[in-house]
Image: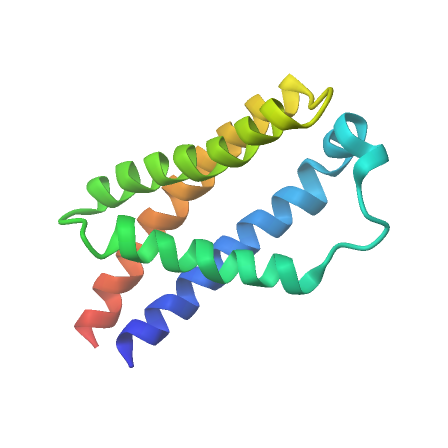
Length: 131
């Protein structure tokens, strides 16, 4: 039960950060970079499945094996680099005129959000264990 609570907390933290980033800070930038390719409405099911997978990946690969908050933070940064880097660099390789500024910004965001979410998730796990 604690693992499920830990997962839910991680999911909420990641989704809150990412949705704030997308809607409050990066929306105009993304529209400038790939506006003509954006869907009129986002596919909420695909987005939700992505959030579930990403939150689980952070726990499995970054938080649960970490022995300290610093290690969770470093693991999360690397996970963000690998996951967001894979997405952006495959797009850059395959999609004509995929913008380099978007590649750089999105990878940097992945590193940051992976790092912060993993650290917060590790601290949440410590709190849950103390209950």
